[in-house]
Image (cartoon, rainbow, N blue to C red; front, top):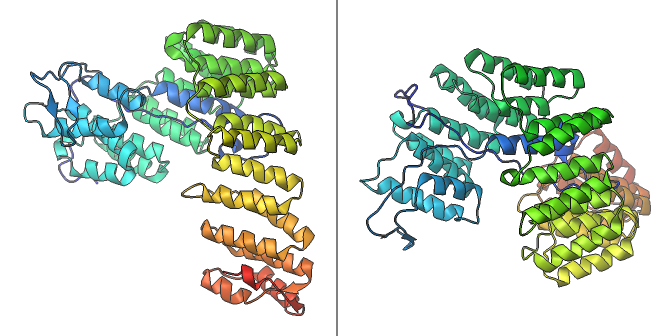
Length: 525
């Protein structure tokens, strides 16, 4: 990857290096969940805090230099876009990366490319780290790797390696991240906690929690943990005694705990029913919350919700509305979810109406909260009415929307609607991440009714989504057995789909071979 001229210990000139790390928040639905997310299989402390810890530790710190790139006159890039003089600097680019409202990522990437070809702009390794991260966001992992490979050996140094490492973390490329860390160690690039923090976030988000203490010990051999390291470490911890030892170590190191530290501890105490301790850490957390860390308010709401404190939830929400001109979608999502969890359904509906009247985004994640609540309460008629209203208001149903409807109709055994919604669900995404549970449940209902036509339709939807395997064919065959019918050319179809038969497949084919021929040939594809 690096070539023979890979340089050791080259500084970017700012004394710091870094890249961002963001965690996409999962929508939290209240009540009896009908959707299973793989992330939710992690321990509860990890589920609740990993996003907060990762997000907080990695605000864009790629390069702290603020030297402005002054120009006498505006210039134009290859797209004809004006780049004004004066205010264009590295800080603007870094802020733009984290906030798409400032500049689009594509435009930022164009600015970086323009800077790269300007002879009188002397770029340093930190600038190339920014550019690499932008390329990863705009064009993907492969393009970012090629950008790194094409860099001169003198620029394959600490900042650019850290940026590439961050990209591997974002794409959950564990093996590549580990290999890069080994190379960075050989070159002396691990004298700061940031690269370790990136890999810690990777281990936590992928559930490799046993690797966390091992990496912490490696970190301590080369450098000292920072507050973000301790926050990630606490996030991976699931017992109070260990967590409190980690917190004590943080204090002895004379590191100031931040709001994420106390949020993580509070979550753990709530889980362990240590509510007195939770109240104390929650108060300490609120002392560290300000307008500068806006996301912390949502964390306060969630924690008070988990403690069942409705009055505190409303107090924090009012405080937010008095502190900020407008609430964003994520904050409405948090508050509506909390009200639903507290079983304040009318208040949740009122707040949703407020969001609908002021938000221009049409983000389906917000109405999905209420849709899930209606379905969980077995109010399918209300759910259908609500769904129709959201569509009429221009909100485009997402995969989650269709999956929720699938579960709702499945509970009612309305299999025609189940198949319709499932088909739309898998067709709404470019690449479907299969949910084995919903596949089995739909086939189970089809089998109970001996609905071979429906089973064939489901097979077609799964094939179109690129998810056909031996188990799927066995589920199809079980439906035929229940119906007392023989499927047509199933062996040939499996061969065409490049699916191997197992013992159960052979057994089911033998059973159905003695039955009457099916009349659903029109469904076959």
